[in-house]
Every structure is written in C-alpha cells, then in structure tokens.
Image: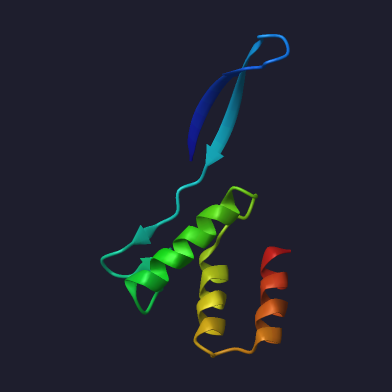
Amino acid sequence: MFVKTFNFVTSFNNTKHQIFKMYSEIEIDRQNLTIMGVKFNSLSELENTANAIGSNMFEGFVPTKEIIQLYMDWKNSQISESDFLNLIYDAVQ
C-alpha cells in the first residue's frame, strides 16, 4: 500500500493542512493480459477494466480476484446477469 501526501493552504485562514490518500496496488500484467491473475481477451479490454477498477478504488471499492473473475464470467456470457449480481453481492458481504 502506498501513501501519498498532499499539502494545501485553505483560502479562509491560510492554515496549512495535509490530506492523506491511500493507494492499493493491484497486479496488472499487460504482457500476459491478466489482472490479479484473471485472464482477459485483449489489451484494450484489460486496460478499460483496469481504468474502471482504478476509478472505483478512489470511491472505496476493493477489488479481489473473485470479483474480477465474476465480471469476466458475466462479460463472456458464462453466467447470467442476475447470477452475476447475486454472486457479487455475496462476494462483498
């Protein structure tokens, strides 16, 4: 896990504050087309998914291999949308 510190000065009282942003690293292998060990069909599919995961991580989403695999199973029509949603719900509980 990485911690990045940002300094800023508030406009109303010139007080200096620090904001701590927490970053979690996830395993992305562009050569083998995998995220956290889950195989993707193309580099563009992998990059689009990685970007979506990264954006959601800023909102508090914590990706797991299981969730990424469920997503790929749904995307490749191996499970239905309702099964996907139920399994995702179970995975995050």
